[in-house]
Image (cartoon, rainbow, N blue to C red; front, side, top):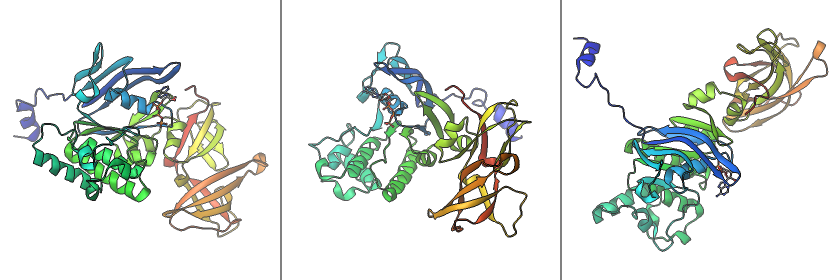
Length: 377
Ligand SMILES: Nc1ncnc2c1ncn2[C@@H]1O[C@H](COP(=O)(O)OP(=O)(O)OP(=O)(O)O)[C@@H](O)[C@H]1O
């Protein structure tokens, strides 16, 4: 019997069970007075999935998390956990009854409890020995096992945040909500803690909705990212979807600094000082923004004085660690005499040409995007 025949004859194969999302927010709108903080958001997190809300300050990320947690009364829409409505349609389950783990920037520790007391606070119903063992386990995870007896006022801001993280994860919740959970940590500790948190989330099977304004952090943590602007989700997808096929210049720019060139489509292409860029699917005459990631700008030293590719001049070059950032000036010739363009190229390793060096410049089509300009938000 073939595998497919076996699968189709299996009694369970005929009716695969649809697992509801661990967390689903549907049709969410929320205003603070005249400020429309969230303006029609649908987002769902599958069991075991990590979803990041990514966007600039004030776009409504924290409000969505607070609504999911029940810390803010829902005005419009619905919140469901494991397919059960917990808010909306006349329901409003209290935060402590939702069984979600929370780490909020302003979610304070209990000042009268030591670190261990804070961490095991939510483990009601656990045998005493198991509570302590779990407390030690999560404190080791966040690197604070030796501070179990300290009180919150004796800890730095970053240490308090790690205790809050340990406290949220201790009861092994089905859903964890994290609001900028690593923002108080220095860069090295942040890399270690977020790596460990990701492993713990994945091994525990907890679903996680996390808020960040840091695209690298979102790409590190997320199975899926929802990019937000002005209370709405502008694009959702895997990190690779969003990086390789951004919906607009805003999304593209959110994944790192970009070169932006204004132009106009003529014959399915845009003529720029850095060469001709294909603009399939955009009507002739449309004003466009050409977005080129710095890592998509290729530069080569000119061995001779002539090149078919456009040439630029190095203004300055800086070593940033694993890459070098080269500032270039491109100048127009012929009909474009007098025009100039400033470009950033990010090159692997140490590449530090001297100011004034003439270089051949080309762009990687996979790192170049063309979007209609001035599209209403
Ligand atoms: N309690 C409140 N009262 C009035 N306005 C509020 C309140 N909380 C948030 N806002 C406003 O609602 C909008 C969305 O805020 P929110 O905190 O959800 O954004 P955010 O994307 O999480 O921002 P940040 O990254 O800075 O934390 C902002 O304009 C903010 O000023």
